[in-house]
Amino acid sequence: METTIIIDKMIMHHVDMTTKKIIFAAKLIELQETSLEYYHTKLDKIFASPSLKNINVATLGLHVNRANVSQESDEKFISSSKETVQDLYNYFIMFEDMPTCNIVFVECKVDGVKHHIMMKLNFKLVETNVIEEDGGQMIVRVAQRFNLPSKGLNVEEAIVVNQETKEVKIIERKFMLDGKMDTYISNLYLQGYTELNDRQKISIMEKSIKRINREYNNNDIDTLALTKHKMVESIVEENQINPIQIAIKVFEKDYGAQTECIEMIKEAGVVEEDTVNSSFYYPQKLGKCRIFTDTEVEIIINAQDYIQGNYIRKQENPDGSISLILDNIHELTMK
Image: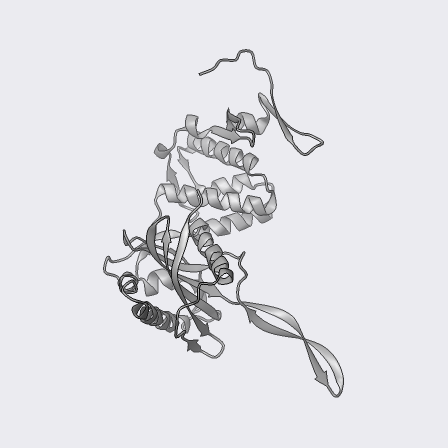
């Protein structure tokens, strides 16, 4: 389901980790068409991210309080955002590989519900050619510079506060601290703990498989059927579902896709030992696939039959269309 996001106001501060300086913005971002398109895309990616997870924090936690105060006026929105950036910077300097970044604060409505969102846009170090004059001759040298992430890249770090329910969700990544990778949003800044329920674990697995599959294969139907089939097998054989093991089995013939999918699932908070109670799922129902065509035809078939080509065959036609052929049907009934 598509998320409807209406941006009310935004502000962006810059943190230069090379010079160890914070450049605070004095006013809100003007909501022009070009900037709105960029930030709308970034916000969409936050809510579509399999890495977005719930975090348990105190009801009167610092960040939740600031989110509440920021609603009172533009001045308080700006001042509370500056306080948050300063607090975050105090953690940034603890890490060895913290990148230069823009930190954007957004007041918006998500499907009609008010949200306060902080997203950290990490700059990427890229190589570029620089043309210079040297002794009357033009020379080309390779230099490095920081680039703001493009519109299509995922948001790596964010804090989302639902201002009606006070629910907090985060996307976070690890950086190097004292010789090991560690996070700072959940355990240092928010001082909370992330907790995924069974449905969230399955959702993370499914979203990760779908996203990686699109990057590698672009065949959602076959992968969805295979995912369902492997989940049913796991329930029947082990009476539980291990999300990472399902991803391994789905991409067992593509090591690159398998590795990326496992990494994405782990970044979202699911670990190798995590399992899902099979009581949430009924094999008979889970094993069914619903196929919808652009001609408004719906077909319901067992995932295993679809994968193995039992009773149904897919045929690609010369004109680019697809024919689904039903085989070995002895009787037709209508319900």
